[in-house]
Amino acid sequence: MAIKKKTAVLIGGVAAVALIAGGITAAVLSGNSAAEATPADSTSESTAAAGAGDTVEFNLGPDQDRIRLDEVPEAVAAIKASGFEPIETGKLTVVVSPYVAPLGLYADDDTTLIGNETDIAQLIADGLGLELNLQPAAWADWPLGIQSGKYDLITSNVTVTEERKDLYDFASYREDLLGFYVKSDSEIDSIEEAEDVAGLKIIVGSGTNQEKILQAWDAENIAAGLDPVEYQYFDDTAAANLALQSGRADANFGPNATAAYAAAQTGETKLVGTFNGGYPAHANIAAGTLKGNGLIEGVNLVLNAAIDGGEYGEVLARWGLTSEAVTKAEVNPPGLPRE
Image 1: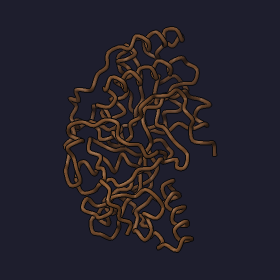
Image 2: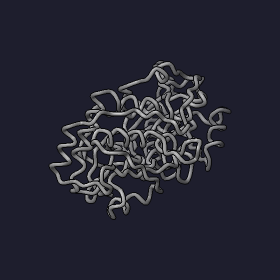
Image 3: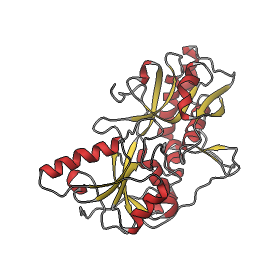
Image 4: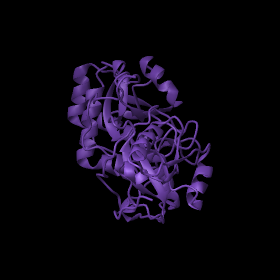
């Protein structure tokens, strides 16, 4: 087994997110499995105190007391100068997909929209001096909704791609990460390169980008005379977790957000490595709007104001996503290449 004496990081905080489609470690809500290794830029008292085996309680009730942001004059001026007009006067209509914690979900009243992406939307609306109007929708429905003028903006784990940039403008606000998670008392404390997975039994989603990464490393190891990876596939999260806790699997490799949420809630697992989901390319999660409508520059200014002011870091910390933080928001950053 690949064992390195380094300190493992447990993401404590409310959640982790990923669109679970066709298995425990399927594609992220973005529709692509994209992400890159990035250290946490901010922590909260709860996340800093959490360690392997610790648990964190998250506020899943309707009274969220969201982090708020003061109006950002430069952003307000930018959208006014651009001629942008919101769909509903005085409001910013933002679509979110409330089906995967911690990015988007319903509170325990089964009515109130909560999660990291709703909190990011709140910061943006505040900074633009608009009232937030959250609208739930299936993730697959957002493109048509943006194009038809039903929504002003989406904040729902959308990965920037070159193809999407043909139709939408983006302002990045999070790294899209994949994570290696092991049992909290595992002797494995770091997975950073190919040799670290040699001989391990690893849970991975079939047909995902993380499987491709693992297969490339496995081929490299075999060529070097190292032991091959034993791939393990499961149809549901419970079965995969049982395999990890019983020792039938050594690690789980999949979307970081979802696994981080589970680690924080149960204390049964710990994070030992993160990688960009678009590896070897780099991918960003971003807020998206109709291309050329004049909104995105203002959104980007708000995000950077929230980053500089600390409100952005507080939002990610309360949902356990500090490892996915960015130090600067960008308009239409390089996206995943066209297929």
